Image 1 (cartoon, rainbow, N blue to C red):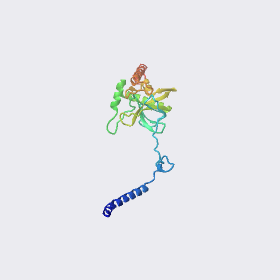
Image 2: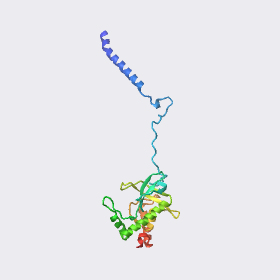
Image 3: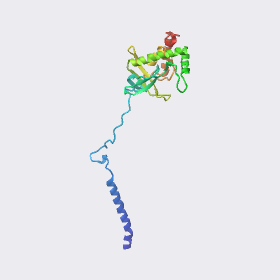
Image 4: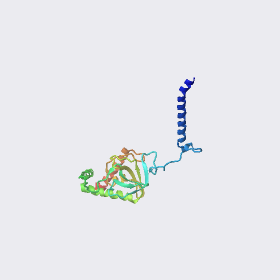
Length: 233
């Protein structure tokens, strides 16, 4: 019996050592705030992140974010259909009108050797006018657009789509003309200052893009009949 007890004693010692080490490790574990008496939630260890800017409103029937009380921001590239907007939260972003394209307001050459002359000729061909006349129409369109945007606060509808990934986002812009709300792109067509081109989209009120295009085509026919803008030649 004495021999058997001697064989078992090393295992007993090992078990005692393991238990002692486990107890020591448990005592060294840092106390979690939730383990403290009366504590339900641990305190925040860092300041909460700043919430992302939100639109002022979003109509459940519409896919667009709505930004009211927007203003025009100064930028050398502002044009008849593309311009820098200051949103109510202070951000400044470039927006491009759905449906329409106003002619270029100047002949330009770029550092990489390219220019916008072919584009101007294409725009002139739409109206059947000379390229120089197209530039004049572009200047008139720029004057109308920037004037309306600078005169009153306006409302912007966007879903932040940027087809060319150039940080220019499509939008519908609601402005006031004679104290009445109007879509900016409609006004440009009615005044003969823009061609029907560029991305179409359903209106924020749910009007289908195809239906709205027919409306714009009717406005264009009226502009032609009235010899408005580019259609006067």
